[in-house]
Length: 168
Picture 1 (tube, helix red, strand yellow):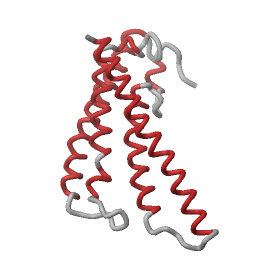
Picture 2: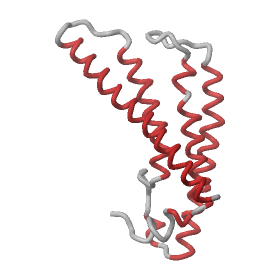
Picture 3: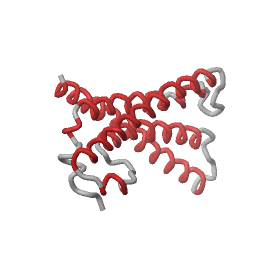
Picture 4: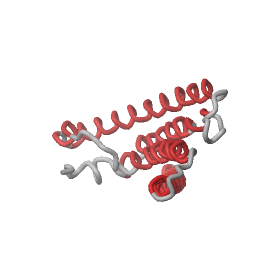
C-alpha cells in the first residue's frame, strides 16, 4: 500500500509541477508582452500586472508541495546534520509531522480566506478574488498528502538516503 501511495503521490507531484510550470511560462510571456507594449508601443495593457500576480500565486503554491516532497526546499539543517541514527530519524519524523500540521493550517485558513473574498472582484480580470487564493488550500492539501507519504515511508528519503550526508 505504501508503494501504491507513493506512486500516486509522484503523479500528483508531477501534475502540480506541470501547473506551476505553465504558470511560470505564462508569467514570462505576459511580462515580456507588457514590457514591449509599455516601452515600444507606449500602450501598457491594463490587465497584465494583475494576471501576472495571480499566476505568481499559482506558481508559488503549486511548487511548494513538490519541493517539500523532493526535499528541495530551503531548510535549516544545523540540528539535523549534528544528529545520527535514531535521533536524526526522529527529528526528521517530527519535521514531517510539523509540515503536515502546517499543510492543514494552510488548507483550513486558505479555505476561510477564499470564502471571505468570494464576493470581491479583481478589477482587470473580472473574476472573484477567491479564485486567486485557491492555490493556498490546494498547496496545503499537497503538503498534507506528501507529509503523509513521508511519515508512512520514511525510508524513501529519510535517514538512509537524504539525511545520511550533510548538505553544503
